[in-house]
Length: 263
Image 1 (cartoon, rainbow, N blue to C red):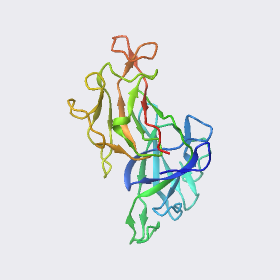
Image 2 (tube, rainbow, N blue to C red):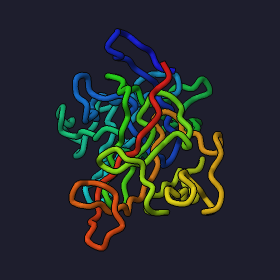
Image 3 (spheres, rainbow, N blue to C red):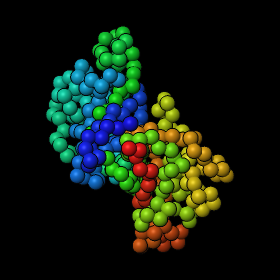
Image 4 (cartoon, rainbow, N blue to C red):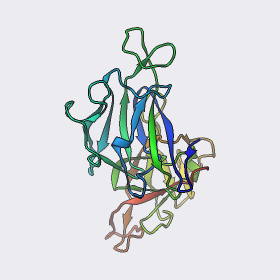
């Protein structure tokens, strides 16, 4: 659940980040900004909520570029700088690294904790989940943009959602229904590996399917707040931005429409 601090739906949340590799998307946006979230608004903590300050580089993130390639590692330098850094010497400036609404980032977490769940650098420390402290404004209408090809998206609401409630649409907001398998997503398993492809079968089934014959059921794929997933978009559109199967249609971005967050 998330904390509401005002009538403007401004709040904060602790989002769990598993040990090892995972995908993450911000569950809030910059206050007054409908498009982006500043990486400097993200603070990694130990399981008890204490900002990581004893070690450098135990957590780093990678943002995908416009071609779907992973960019440079941006490491949390808690011990020496108290912030995120690309070069290990200077903290990134506010606005230098922004994450588009609903855009996922890759995260590597190597934090170790003691028996009480606090960050430690001792050899007796054990690998553990971390948390990202996220704050900002809640978006009550979540439409995540997915560019053509491979990208990372995710649950950008502060509530758990079910994949059956997610709908891919063209740029004009129409649910995709002319073709099958042009959009699919992959969730990560508990050890950071990509799972099976879950394809949108708009033409034949009107929903998500793994085997191409049966729709997934509610509860089959539950996505926690802030959890990211890989998405592949091969949708083509006409000159007006509507989904099209015509030969002259061109690759286009789409939206993933998410259910509104539970308040």
